[in-house]
Length: 217
Ligand code: E4P
View 1 (spheres, rainbow, N blue to C red):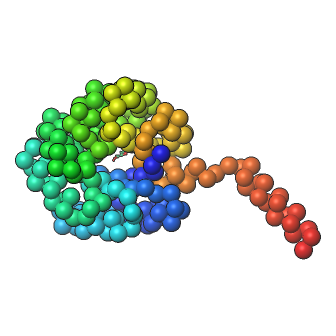
View 2: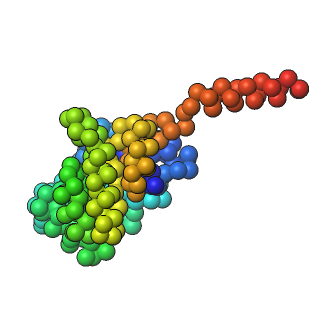
């Protein structure tokens, strides 16, 4: 299972990278705005900075909602750095743009996916990644994990190569449950990664080992 971090915060990206378990980064316009990164030029520069910190795929989202606009923006994003993955919304023109980019060998991430049917379309269009937003489904009292499960079954039935990128992860249990289902990738905040470290028995066990070692010294 690949671990992506879902942020545009360079310090958090570096922290996850330093832990040695980071495989990539996802961003979206809201995450950029949260870091105060606004304006096309600043956003493009920030993507380059992110690519310099991590070794894996970095999803960069288009703003256009029409096919021509998405192609123009996506080509500019892909030209920025070899690690860039063009992130496209799950709308009709996004599906068309996904097919366009996949035919050209440019990696894509189809985002804002909330149903198995949408995920099937993304795979048919040759998406590299499909991003079901499980946390946002949970927020409206729908089982987000069930969607990840459905997509896994459908993709396995037909051997689709599109990777399931479980997105909108909110906590460590989401990560564990997605791993049990067999999601290819998870993307979440830094806390969803570092939270996996924590167990009180690890802390108390280590404290006891150190205490006993020090008795003889
Ligand atoms: C991923 O690509 C999305 O940008 C992200 O996971 C959305 O998460 P949120 O629902 O916490 O905003």
